[in-house]
Length: 113
Length: 112
Image 1 (tube, rainbow over the protein chains, first blue to last red):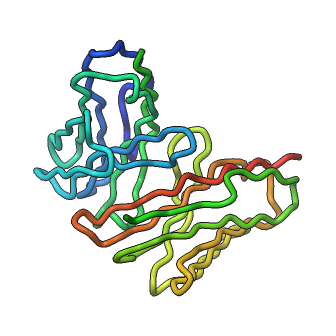
Image 2 (cartoon, each protein chain N blue to C red):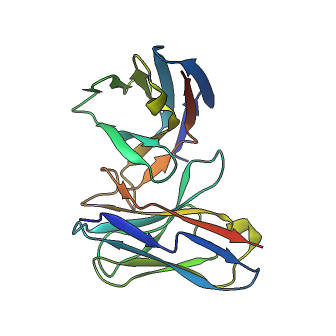
């Protein structure tokens, strides 16, 4: 039981490049989330998926897109990376509603030059 | 706008001390208040407090929720160096998405 896994662990991009962050969970959870964490700002929600086939914007969605590929997988795409997207990205999942306990992946450290 | 504010921003104590971390929130449709511990990587869950459970305890850690005054505290007694971490507080609201809103965290350092 791996919980929530994320790939890659680290990534360096140049401005304007694109990439996809992958997330998978093996807990049969319905809801999945993408957060970014910047120094001193806690975690901010980018997008979430309350169930397979649905996605919704969170607090900071601009510059990102997501895909809920199936119940297990939820990917985050940066179409044209900008230095302001330098951050640590966490994926999380929860069994039910978003205000219950969420389980977090190990994070992806992204640097955009 | 829903908001969660944590204080202090950082704290340095010595092993054996007791610490109190604070979390205040402004809410529209409150459902839960969660505490997480974040060491070097992913946040790990500590407690969830709701209307039906306003006090939780696990070993040296305990937390209470004051729904009237809109705050929560996390207490750690007999601190150890392994307690050094960032402690995150998050409020759960019922809105279009039923999401968590996180505070900025309190960085705790416990010196030997």
